[in-house]
Image 1 (cartoon, helix red, strand yellow):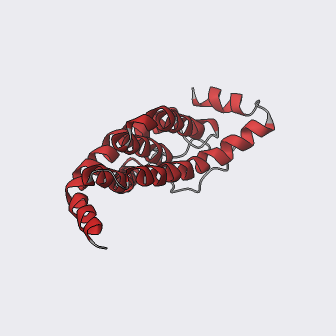
Image 2 (cartoon, one colour):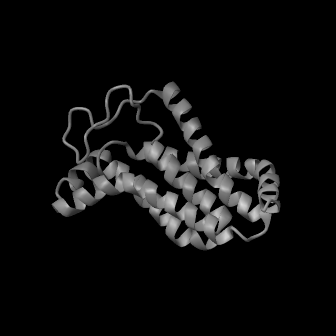
Image 3 (tube, one colour):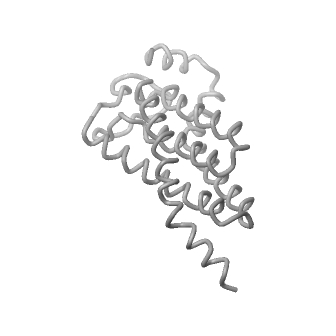
Length: 178
């Protein structure tokens, strides 16, 4: 399946290949903007709601950290070694499973939906597109992005909810100061 997707990607128009290569990283900035928008929308909401918005990026960082630990144990080589792909193959030692981009994208989508459910229609498709783009540009196997997606979608919201208990009093304290 990986080879079929990569071979197909190489036949697509140049503008689409460029968009995929740029978009695979640029999507992370879109998620950062969505977190900022969510914080702005919830800045006057109840303290717990704002705490979820503030803790969301923290949950994503913790999910990313777990994925980095998993990578050091699994140590799966990149599929792009020795073949032509859209994106340059990461250096040796930058392991493939799980896909960190997929962990971050799915984790961000999950944390954002916790904070503001109406964002699901934007955040979830964007996360799926970002995850798929990692296979499309040739740097991950499909199971790398599926595993990363599942890891991020489960762990980031979980870590976010675990952090809310600590963040809510901080939000209340910050609001009580002039």
